[in-house]
Structure formats: structure tokens, C-alpha cells
Length: 106
Length: 237
Image 1 (tube, one colour):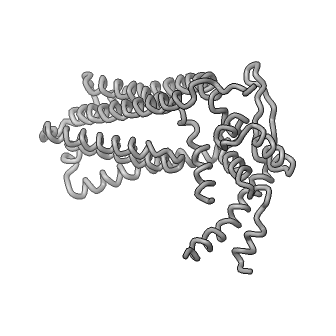
Image 2 (cartoon, one colour; image 1 turned 120 degrees about the horizontal axis):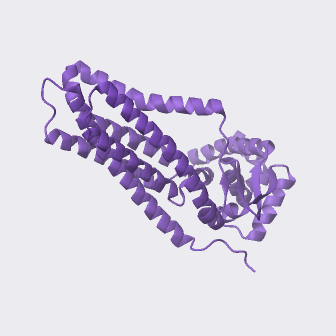
Image 3 (cartoon, chains in turn brown, green; image 1 turned 90 degrees about the vertical axis):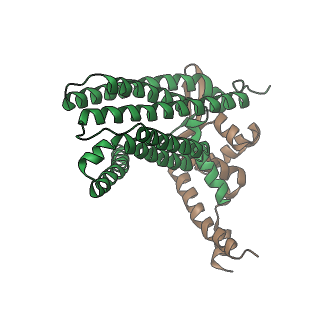
């Protein structure tokens, strides 16, 4: 198995799932975002989004903070340091795979 | 896939500009600054030192008050209009040292081309010529620098409309330079205050037109945003 293909099997499966990858990518460039923002930007249904957010929280990539904006309850999601590292690692591993596939394009 | 990740990153970075409010606020601030410069360019000024101190003071006060007011207005507008429609995003916290480095880089980025242009001009022409042609090269130089900043910001945030803004600002700077050249430059011996007045006038036109461009861009963005998100998001029952 070539080096880049080995990398493929080492990719973090939690992040590799397309919907979760979108969520982690969205959250990686901000301090935090609320449910509505993630819902609108990811294009997921509410149920799906909740499931994926729960999965990310389960593995410790995501933290949830419940606050109030005025009198309205407000939930913000942010990546934990573990989540940030996992995303960086994922991108590092993905990069050679993409380069390899581009180089071997028929 | 990497392209999609980059697109998601850029979309989040550009979220502050999604509703057009920031462009409208910046445009408004530009128009106020242009007004101050224009009035100063046409007021009688006893000495260069007096002019420099008064205009710098007024611009600093207008900028500080304007930026504070804009932040307060934007905060309320986004809180009542944008966040209920497309959600809330908290930007990354920047450390004080990062802010200092950023400010330093911006100052360098703005100053270096001006100094280089000035040095190059002095090599090929006398100080008098450079001073006399200030109303021409100043708007062209400022327009070029702003357009480069606009392109860089647009690429970082994935906002294509910033490319168009950059082209329009650059063309405005060039057009004002040509206009100042066409109406004739200050004659020798160059009176510094005359040259400064003319430069202020040309600069105020550049800032005014750039402000109007930003306002229009912000308004178009706002109308499109409102059309796409007519009402606050409601929970589906």
C-alpha cells in the first residue's frame, strides 16, 4: 500500500463523515457559533444536525455552552482544543492523498 | 474535498459581511471623512502646521466617534436583524500581541508604497515637481493601496464582490488623478498650502466616491440578504 493510501485508512472517521467535516470546518475559523448558523450553513435538517453535533460532543471535539441573549435561551457550539488538533491532523493527512490523486489523474 | 473545506472556512470568515451592514457603515464613515477633508481643503489656512494639527485632530475625533457609533449601531442591527435570521457567530479572540503585529503590518503596508513612490518620484523629479503633482499621484496611490487591501480581504473571506469594489476604487483613484492633471497642476514656485489643498480636494473625492461605492454595495447585499431571509427563523411545528 502506498504512503498516501495508508494515510487514507488513518483518517479520523469521526471528522471524515461529510456532514461532520462541514460542521468542524465551519467552527474551526470562529470562536463559537449557534445552532441556527450551523443549520443554515450546513444545509442539514435539525434532527441530522443534532445527531452530528452530539457525536462530535461525545468524542470530545465539541463543547456546548448554554447562555441567554436577553431573555432568550441561546446555545453556542465551539471546537475544543482536542477538536481543533483533530481537524488540523485530518487536513495534514488529507493533503498528500489529494495531491497523490491529482498527480495520478488519467 | 479540500476546496469544500476552504469554502466553509471562508464562508464563516465572511459572515460579518453577509448582510451588508458593515459596508454601509464603512461607507457612511468614509463620506463623513470626505466631508471633513473637503471643508478643510477649502477653508483658509494660516500655516501648514496649523492645518496639519487641526485636520489630524478632526479626523482622529471623527474616526474614534464614528467607529464607536458604528460598532454600537452594528451590534444592535445584527442582534435584531441578522442573528434571528441566519444565526450568531462569535469571531476568534485575538491576543493583544497579534493586534499590535497586525496594526504594524497594516501601517507598513500602507506606508511603504507611498514612501517608495515618493522616493522614486524624487529620483526622477525635483521636490517642487513632486509637491506640485501631489494632487495627481496621491489619489492614484491611495486608490491602488485600498484596492489591493480590498482584493486581499475579499480573497480571505471568499467574497467575490470585493474584487469588483477593488476595481471600482482603483478606477476612481486613476480618474481623479487624470482629472487633477487635466485641470492643471500648481505652478512654480509651488505653494505648499495650495498643493495640500488640491491634494485634500482630490483625496476627499476619492474617499467620497469610495464611500458611495461601499454604501451601494452594502445596500445591494442587504436587499439580497433580506430577500433570501425575509423573516426570522421559526421553529417548525
